Image (cartoon, rainbow over all chains, first blue to last red; front, side, top):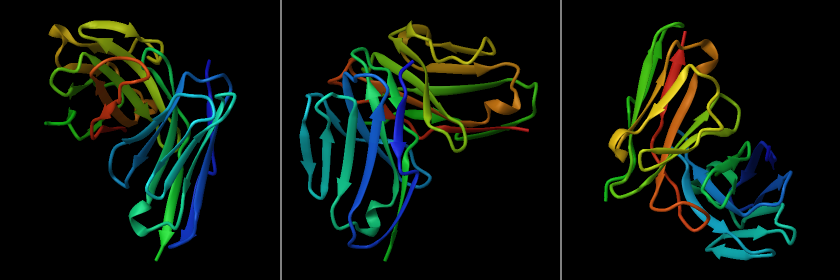
Length: 110
Length: 115
């Protein structure tokens, strides 16, 4: 079945540093979605990428979808303490089922 | 607009007991999903309802798990009998439609501990 690998598992940064998390799928994805889970919270949808090579930006967050639609990345520029949490990528299908990566736990030191 | 709600928020039961988790999706959302996160591992898909019908139950671990969505509104997930490895956080999500253009909204989850 489809597997989505996400690295790194943990990332500790100083406030103001950049952060990147990467996802790789064993199969070509229909789409990829990114979620953020704050400590003690639940996954909250950030964005969805559908097209090969797509790049989307949300303020300090940049999301990329690979040309082969098998990998994706999330980059945060100049992290802030409000960015702490676990970031998940999830490969989506045309009918809705999501296959999640393991998540990257981001800690930001002030 | 009210979000996805789940009950209970926490449940501690002994091995062999039965537990029923409930999910109320966002009103008007026909699609309802159950996911589970076992400690330290990824969030895994369990099943997907479209209204009252099971669209995909390929992620259900075994026949100790039974999901229902009578009337196409709220859903329940029953674990009977519970085993230690069933411990984890069970998330419910709903979406207005299915597929790649519909965002899934997650509930707060039910933390299940089996002792």
